[in-house]
Length: 237
Image 1 (spheres, rainbow, N blue to C red):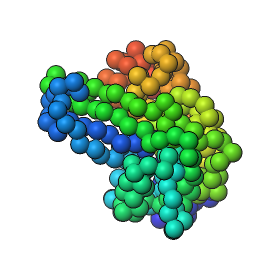
Image 2: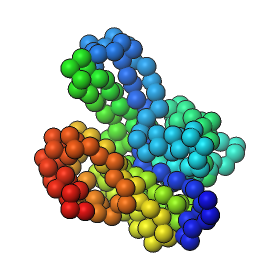
Image 3: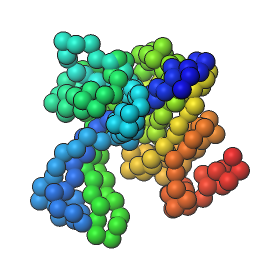
Image 4: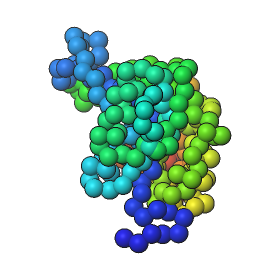
């Protein structure tokens, strides 16, 4: 595959949150019914970076962490405090071959946590602890623009749009990637409990809808969560 103008050949840069998921050790129970939880790496944008690397592609994760290492970390734009969960997540990225050259650090917030389960009726249940978590504190001035401009595909979700300063950083990163010739990949990944209201969620998620070249979304999600608003946009896009 040849190198395209404004993009390093094959490089997928993923921007957004990375966190710890706690899932019940028994399937089909609610969070209240669970007697014990297992920890696992989470965060949809980080999952994409790992998946690309495992499939033999080249990926980087953009975010901010508080992770002290004698070796300079490579390619992330996310945030964690210097806690054991932050160490665990960065180690997992590196062990899976994800580039972490752009890691930034913040000492003032901890890694986000999420408790999640799939109940017997097929409904997922979430409970988040992140107010604020480190991923929310990335600022526009801290962006590694040279890294972002090397992306052939720039991937992101919607959780980083919820609050400042990360929202402004997210929008600036998108602009930089697009201007450099990258394709934009968007996973709306709605998590309504994290937004101030359902209306704010729909407005925030739709605010960047037409910027993307690729959108990962289901008709069911469009109809049930967004009440048809995004589905209408998708049909006319």
